[in-house]
Image (cartoon, rainbow, N blue to C red; front, side, top):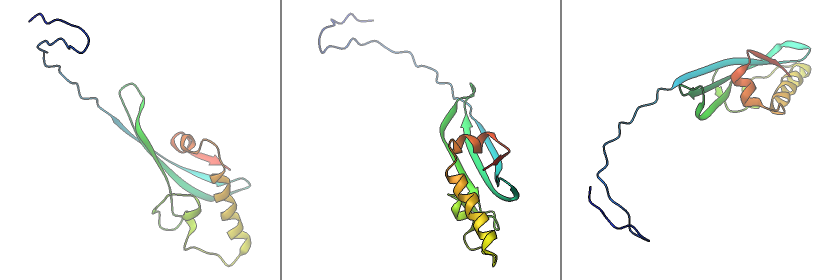
Length: 122
């Protein structure tokens, strides 16, 4: 190793040994659950949470959460869009679906609930 004077603006140089970089393995997780309306458990909206965890159990990156359309099962970004294209002649039934969507939207800790629970009453 050469001796190099150090001081302001001078960086000592050394030959660096190549560091071995260990690749971290991540585990994929997915949880599918449903929200149901209090007093009317037959009204359900399904949601999915997907995420990666490192070997220590820490979440890596962002958690992906979404809802499923009540008829098609297609991905929906909000609870409100899960019943677009579906209607019922009975206004009471439509009101129950809207109430369920509103209650889900107003639920605190939604991402955590979607990732941890099997079902959740709102």
